[in-house]
Length: 437
Image 1 (cartoon, rainbow, N blue to C red):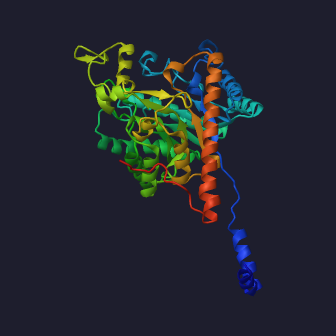
Image 2 (image 1 turned 90 degrees about the horizontal axis):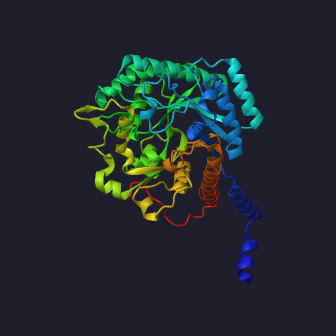
Image 3 (image 1 turned 120 degrees about the horizontal axis):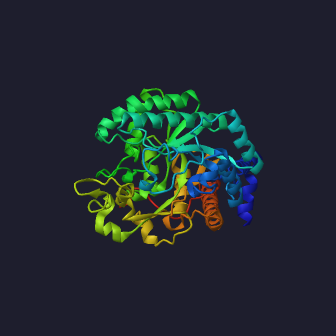
């Protein structure tokens, strides 16, 4: 001990001071960054009865803003849709009720915007974005024109409400091949993105494949369903000067439906240099039924669904809704926090590992985490209750669950990748690995 002390005393004081300074400089404070927790207003379409909201459309938004405060959300994602009287798809053919919380039969103007912004300010609720989920490449020119005009109205409403993004689908032209759809996208969707750019907006695409959109055999009916097509579409956007407008609103439930896992998707985006593409998140799970997979595989039910009568598609909208058996026969949407999972299901990519999902987002994507929206989407069929009082504690529980999961992931990331890394202390263990087979 004396010898050791003697050696240390022989070190120049300047070196001792430099070493002490280096150690202090290597200390990184613990500063976890949390995402903004929100809720899609389609979670309860009938919060305001239709006979009331049809006469006073913005009452539906005011009611939802107040409800969001009761639920403990920070933000809402405002759902827009063609009114049932204007839609090309009958309500009976839909999997879920029409969610037109934002009613755009009449143009959204400054007077309406002031009313909505006043409600948001009073309840201290933010607005993440406006969403309108529809087939923007519909093969019928007249139907497509109506949808594009509605999307432009959604763009204008977003500007008046001060949000910087609109969320939706790309869709698919059913009369064309997938490769031909790329050209259709370039010729007919790019103009929409140019309109978004002119308004200072980003267009975030959710990647649901929408298998039940058609009674035909196609499973992938939204062109932007997977990273391979995201990148192909983004290259077209870059060529047209709107690459910074096109982004992805990632929903892990759709990845599970297609046998993918979040970490591998995020790693692939990073490997290919497209880790900037994801700009927002839905948190909705998918619980895959192994029995359904055994019966039909991941393509879902292909025959005897009941959407065809004889040798042609049924004329009854309720029969056409059975096209969704391509999806529902093998899985069920999860409202986060409502499902118990066998750990083996995570390894088989048959359910969402929520903690790893949030950790992977921070580890692999280029995100401004504190300004990234994490939006709870409720489509768990058995809990799709059109009763505000019964649904309230269910949504409260799910929002609280997601908030705590995100906080846990943020703390893990800050501790492992910032605090320990700054002091060159290794992280223990391996964790979930991408591409593992």
